Each structure stands twice: as C-alpha cells, then as structure tokens.
Image (cartoon, rainbow, N blue to C red; front, side, top):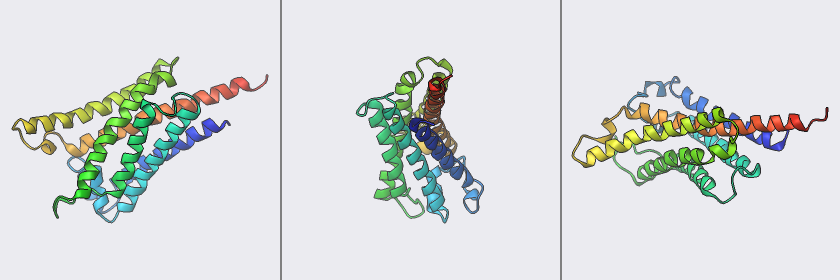
Length: 219
C-alpha cells in the first residue's frame, strides 16, 4: 500500500471517528437532553461531556489536515495555493473552536465566545469553497465523484446562506437571526455536509491510489 493511500485512509478514519463521537453526544446523558433542532453543536462543550466534544472536533481537525497534506503530496494542489490556505483556515478554526468555548448565555456574552463564533463562520465558509475548487483537479475523469464532492460543498454553503439571510433580515428590522431557522438543525447540516465534502475528496484519492497500485503490479 502506497504512503499516499495510507495517509488518505488515515484521514478518512479520523474524520469518521470525529463525526461518530459528535453523534454520540446526541444520545449520551446529559447532552442527550440538548435540542438538536434549536441548540448548536457547541452547546455540548458547556457540560460535563465537553471532553467528548473537544476530542470529536480535534479528530476532524486532524483528518482535515491529513487530507490537505495528502492533496499536496500527491500533487493535486500546490503547497501554497487558494485551496491549501482555505484548508488551513478550516483546520485552524476548529482548533480555535476547541480553545475558545461558546458563550454561555446564562452568564452573559464573552470575548472567547465571540472568537468562537467568528472562527466557526470562517471554517464553515472556507472548507466548502476549498472542495469546490479542488474537485476537478482530484476527479478529472470521474464525474460522479466530482459531483458528490461539489454537491456536499454546495449544500453546506447553501445551508450557511440561510443563516446569512436571517442576519440580513434582522439588520433590516426583522426578528432575531437565530430564530429565523431551526439553528441547531441547520448548523448540524452545515457541519456534516462540509465534513462529508472533504471526506469524499480524500476517499477518492485513496481509491485512485489503489487503482494506480494495481496498475503498477507486474502481470
């Protein structure tokens, strides 16, 4: 097995493990009492299961970093390029989200909570755009893989757009943006489709690497 395929599979495993842990927070007490419709994922970091939330996010950050390392090593993207900068912003935003906990509104606003929010915004925008840019380079001859990666990326940006509409509506005199949509549900959709987008990309790299390994085996 090539080193590129090994790293790609490690990336996928890390991403999946992070998602599974995040999903576990929905069923483990006491975080199972948090509404997934109205409460954001970061709400899990305000309780005793914070360590699970943090580990989940760190695993996704690790998987994402590995994904972009693979893309650079396999020469799908240049070391210093738009996609790698966007990938770095996404990964860094996840680390910031762990370091700066969401605002506990039962106490009041906080600087750390504000940093947390803006880091989330940067990450949710950066990763889908990166995937949209690199999809053709990774899947030049596979329309299905390319469509899957871009489909998840577009879905993530589209869901984020609903929140933007809520913010604009509030600025124009409408109601609170966080009540415009079922915020928790929409945010979960944004996060899941964003992670799915990069997972499809790196999984496609692993599949392609396997095919190339088979070609190189002497008859």
